[in-house]
Length: 342
Image (tube, rainbow, N blue to C red; front, side, top):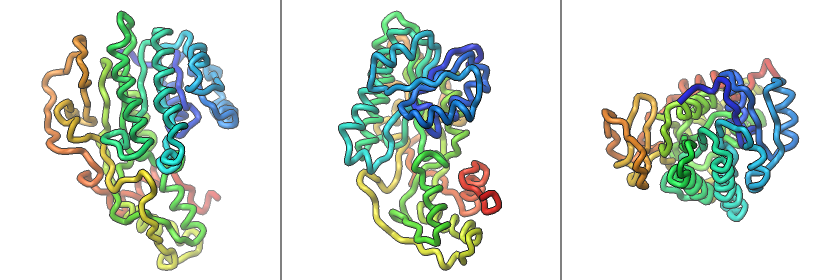
C-alpha cells in the first residue's frame, strides 16, 4: 500500500471533528485533491475558508443519496468514511434515521466505491459496535460488517475495504470534556451519569493516525483496534473541577457533582473487542487486528503475531488514567481554552 502522496481522496463527514482532521492530514501528506463530502452547508463553508488550500473540494450531499455519491466518487483513489449519526441517546429515540445514515448510507457508499473502482476504503467505527447495547452501536456493527463483506463482493476489482474502531475522542462533537468544562465555567453542577462508569479515551490526533496507518497496512477485511487508556467518569469530573474551577473564580469545593444516572443506550463499561472476536484477533505493538470471520480465500493472515488477548478488551479492564494524566491529555489536545485566551 502506498502513501497518500498524489492520491485523490474523499472524506465523508469531512466537516466533523475526526473527518476534518483526516482532511487536513491528507493534505499534509501530499494528496493531489481532497474532496470533503458533508450535508452541513455552514460547516463546509467554514472548513473551506479555514483550510484555504486549492486542493480542497467541498461537496454538499448526503450518504443517503447514492446518485450523489456516485458523482462524488468519480476519479477517487481513497475513501475515508467518517459520516455517521453517533449520539447514543438521540439515536435511541430516532432509530429510523440512524439506520438510514449509518447502514443504508454505508451500503450506498460501498456500491458507489465498487462502481467507480476506488483503490481503498477505510470506515471509521466505534467501541459501541462491539457486542452493541444501543441503536448507534448496532448500526455501526452492521456498517462494519457491510464494509468487511464488500471484499467478497468486489469480484475482480482491486478495491480493499477495512475498518478502524476506537473509543471516545477528546474534543469530538458532543464529547464529555467540553460539556464538563462549560458546567464548571457556570459554577456547576457537573452532571455525571455514574462515577463508576468507565470509558476509553484518545486525542483526535491519535485517532487520525490510526485511520491513516490502517490505510497503509490493510490488505482488506481487517478491523484495526487501537490500544487505549481508560478513565472513570467520576475521576474525570473530579480532576477537571480541581484544575479549572479556580479559572472562573470558584473554589473547587463550591462546584458540585450531580449524579443523573445512565442515559438510554449507555452501558457501564465500553468494549473494543468482544469475547466472540478473540479467536480472530492478533496483537501488534500499537493495535489489535480483528481478522475477517467470513471466508475470504485471498486473505492472508500474517504469521508470527501473538494471540495474547485472553479476555474481552473493555474499559473496565484497561489502564486507568490518574488525575494528572487526564489533565495532561486534555491540555496537550487543546480541548479547552484557558482563562487567559478567552
